[in-house]
Length: 320
Image (cartoon, rainbow, N blue to C red; front, side, top):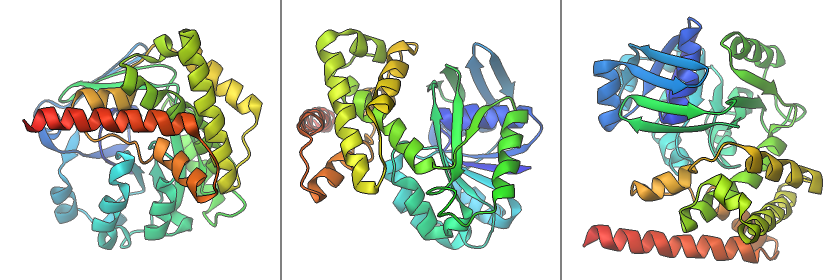
């Protein structure tokens, strides 16, 4: 199969490498030093049970649009930061609509799939999430990953409301399994996306505010209770989208992140590296829905505000 990875950060590199090792034709779209390193030296992925160091086909977006038609690919995997989704997809809309392959999102947040569907339609939209994985670019062209590295995906927003070909969804599930990827197909991917947002809103902004990894946060009695409250507010916001998350869902996600290997969240890494944060896609998604329905989420509001102040201070220091 011909698979295109758009937005090649750690997640895109890890799953792309697994699929390439299984014999599929991968094309990676990246930028900057990461792109240059991949073009010159190939891609290296380090994981306790998977190591990859091979040449890859890595292109800039300009090269992709100039040299390939969308119809060339069998699957597009979107791994962009959520903050870039709407602008990026709008910019390449004309290219995407010339093909018919599905577009699978492996991004943070609960709003990416709606943006994808607005461009290519529901019959081509697959929702997805990567869980139980910590992955970062150690240096250009070199990625370090840890964890079971599971993927949950399915027709968006769910199997009932989607018009995607169910046989096609099953085909991709089997393809991922044969590539050694721990994959689960969901009939209600929208609920799964909100379940992941329980974790993302619970630990991502708070880790960036405190500078602590996930284990340090959950092990601290006060911060652990703060995380649980942030998760409760996320579950409340999910109801605004018609998604019911129970106390058992919150307990499951809290236990999962508490027992997972200590990792720096992507938001903490982005803060340290001076990059834009996915605040609008995580805490912002919770606050936007709560405000729209006149619900109160004071803990999310506080952590979000503290982090925005911290970002502003960082940017002021950098500009000086």
